[in-house]
Length: 618
Ligand code: ARG
Image 1 (cartoon, rainbow, N blue to C red):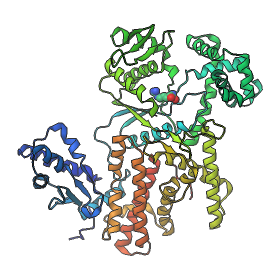
Image 2 (image 1 turned 30 degrees about the vertical axis):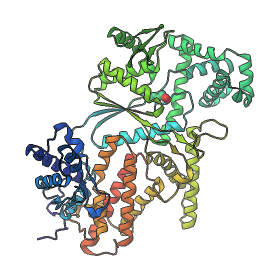
Image 3 (image 1 turned 45 degrees about the horizontal axis):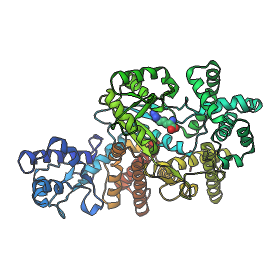
Image 4 (image 1 turned 45 degrees about the vertical axis):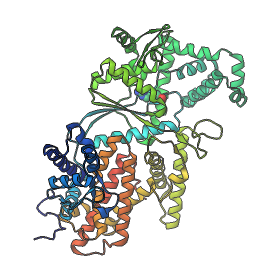
C-alpha cells in the first residue's frame, strides 16, 4: 500500500472541482430526502439550496459546510439537527471526502476532503494546462459591451473602470469555455460632435491641427463646451472662452443645430465627421494599447443609424411605443411614469433608440445567450427601461445584464478631479502611475545594487504602474465607489498588483535558484505528500481556482478573483516561511516543488485573466 497521502501514480487523472462535486452529492441526497417524504423539495429550489454548500470560514470545521438543513427544517416544521442527520444518512461522498459524522451546532454538515483525493487532485492540476479548471459543461455565446467611451471627448478616469472590468470579465468567461464576443459600443454620433463642428467653424487653429490633430480637437471640445454652457465660474477662469461666449450668445443652440445637421446627412458636417473620426480613434487606441486591451468589434453608435427609423416604426406598429406630445416613447409603468423616449418631437433619435437597434442587430448576427453591459451605475434606469422594452419587443430568452459599477473618488471623497477642476485625463493618469512605479523600481534597484539598464527599468515600470492602476480597480467590489490613491496602489505589501507580481517572481525564482527544469519536474510528478497542515492548506487553496472563477461569473465580480489570489499568496508565504523547499530531500522536496510550481501557475494565470502583465523582471 502506498502512503495514503501520496497521489495515485498511475496517471495524472482528471481535474477536480471539490465544491462542484460535493454539491452534486448533496443534490442526490436532497432528492432522496424529498422522495423519502422527509422534506418536500421542488426541483427549482434545488440549485439555491446547493449554493449553501460553501467553503468553511475556519478549517477546524472541515473544508466545506452544507447549511441547508436549517432552511429545510423551518419549512417542514422539524428540528434542523434531525433534518441534518437525515441528509447525512443519504449523503454518499464517494472517495473524495471523509464521510461526515454528526451535524455540528444547529445543523451544519461539515465535510473534509480526503488527503489522498487532495494529493491526486494536486497532481492532476500540476499536469493540466488549465491548472485544474475544467471548461463549463454548457458554453454560451456572451456579448460583452464595455469601455464604449464617447469619442472626441477626452477619456477620463471613469472610463478605466468599464474598460478594465469588462476586459477581465471577457478573459475569465472565455477561459471558462464560453464563446465571448467583445464589442466597444463607441459613442461616435452624439452631441459632442456638435461642439467640435461648431468649434472647427469658429475657432480652429490649423497649425495646431496639422501638428497634433488629437490635441486640437480636444482643445476645441473643452473650449466650446464652456462657451455653450455659459457657466460664469468657468468663463471667469478662461478669457478665450469668455470672449467667444460674448461674441456668440446663441452658441448653445448653434451647437445643437450642428449635431442635427450631421444627423440629417449635411454633406459638409458629414465630411468633417469622417475626417475627425480617425483622429478620435487614434486617440483612444493609444490608450487601449497601453492598457493592452483590444476588442473583437468596435461598432459605434453611428453604425446603427440606418436602422433607427425602422426600429421606431416597428415598435409603434406592434403597439409597444406611441406618440405623446409629438415625441414617441415606450410607456412601461403606466402613463404617469416617464416613458423611454425613442424619438424626440423634432424627429431626433435617442441613446435608447440606438441601444434597441443594437440589441436587434446583435441577436440577429451573433445569436447570444447573454449580453453584458459594463456601464456606470448612473445609467441603471436607462438599462432597466431598455431591457423591459426589449423583452416586450420579443428579445426572447437572451439574458440582458447591466454590470454596474460605482464612481472613482479622490482623497476628499468627491469624484476624482485635478486641481483645475477638470476630471483627470486618462492618459495623464497612466503616465503618473508609470512615473511613480519607476521611482519604486529604481529605488529597489539602487538598494539591491542590481544595476538594471534604464530602458529595462522603464519596461518594468510600465507593467508595474499600469498593473497597479488596473488591480486597484479590479480588487474593489465593483458596485461601491472607490478612492483612487497612487500611494496605496503602489505599495509592495497588501493586496496590490506589485505584491502579486512579486509573489509570482518569488515563487518562480525558486526554480532558477535550484537549477530545476520545471517541465521535467511536472512530468516526473506522480504523487505529493501533504503531511504538514501548511502544505494541505496551500494545496486546497490552489484547487479552489475553478470554484473561484465560477463565483466571478455568477456575480460578474473580478474582486472575487483578486481576493482569491491574495489568499493563495498568503497561504504560500505561510508554507514557504515555515518549511524548507530546496533544502528538503526526496519525496518531500519533490512534493513541495510541485506545490511551488502550481502556485506559480495559478497566480500567473490569475493575473493574466485580470489583464495584469508580469514584468520581465521584478
Ligand atoms: N457611450 C456611453 C457613455 O459613455 C456608454 C455606452 C454603454 N453601452 C451601451 N450599449 N449603452 O456613457
